[in-house]
Image (cartoon, rainbow, N blue to C red; front, side, top):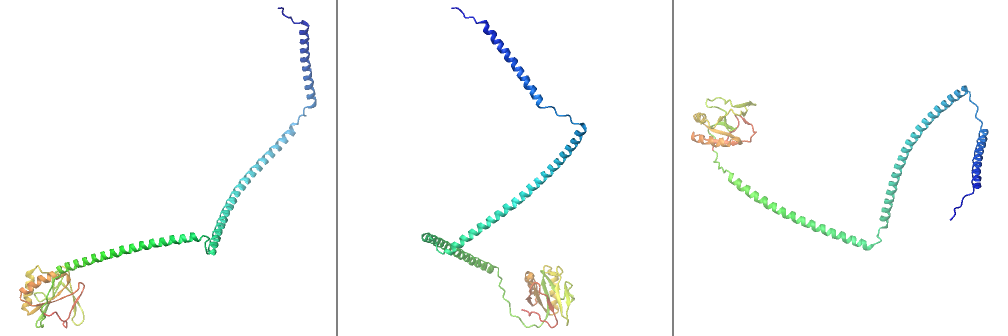
Length: 306
């Protein structure tokens, strides 16, 4: 098959058309640029003196604008803070008003219920009353049970107390010492007084017929005196030699022993009583409280011999 060959005249036409279009575009762009430059002429040059004055004026205006902007910012912050405080105050007032409104509503509802007097649901009231009655019955039964338990406990405690009293009475009976006092006889002899305190003997007159130094004598009126024993200065009952010598002198003088016994010297009294009987003397005694001070007087009396 034979190939087709392009025609040479057609290629030249196409080349000419392309060149014409390129040159036409260049000319059109040049015309547009010329028109644009002629429409916006360059601004005339500003003199140097005018540009410096305008710069200072612009700088002053800029500083004033900055200071005014800073003041406006401070004022804005202050207004924001005050606005927050006012807002908090308003919120607090709103909450208080809301609480007061709630209280008023509750009071009003309570007053309405009290004013109504009767319930709209009688069956509900009856059920409530029955429940209250049951609760009261349960409380009554509980109180009754507690009362019975308390009575039983009281009876047990009473029995225990009675048992303890019986045991204490038995113990007291064991430790009780029964003393039978003989009849007192008429006083025909002089009384030789001896105080028994601190577990020792404190005679008014010693075996030599002198005042016993272990006694403090406080002189009163009309030859009366108080006899106060000095602790640790009496004659111990264990010193039998001194005690026998004292009793022998009393027998020689024709007297009897008058004993004034304090509660702390009962054992001393028992031991001294045996020595008095051994010496063949009569004796009488009185018991005095711990802090009692005995006053001796020529007109006073002594316990009679037994």
